[in-house]
Image (cartoon, rainbow, N blue to C red; front, side, top):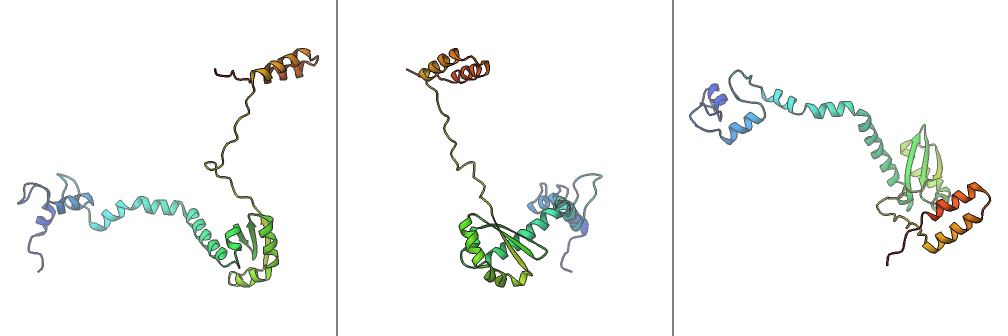
Length: 193
């Protein structure tokens, strides 16, 4: 027999009720995963039950998000297809879709789209293993990154320009045009001295 202590000694290990007066690191670890006695009236869990309970949220997440998992698999599949495109087309191919043997490639400019049209035979040959029967091309402009794209500075209206707008508004017979010129003049900001 490899273990000389009785099973009750294992359950009491690190609980403060055995030969030791304080919990050992092993006893604390066993209590964290749900093994050993924790106190009076509490049930002791087996290792398998503790592991199932501890990772239940991961299983639930994967079951609820099977659609997201399928999308990740599809994205990996499409990335592999993009890598097999001839020349430098893969770097300029922003997206691609495959539906019923019809592949649609989305490029970042018309120049690369035109180049891809000339290479349609090579594209079909390189993607034969994916059962591509037809290739279509479209231009898709890349999404601008709001952190990188600078905001255009707002035009400022001087007090002199505002004064001229108010004079022009006073001369107008059309009430709508007069109100518009007055609103525009109110946008003027005073110049700091």
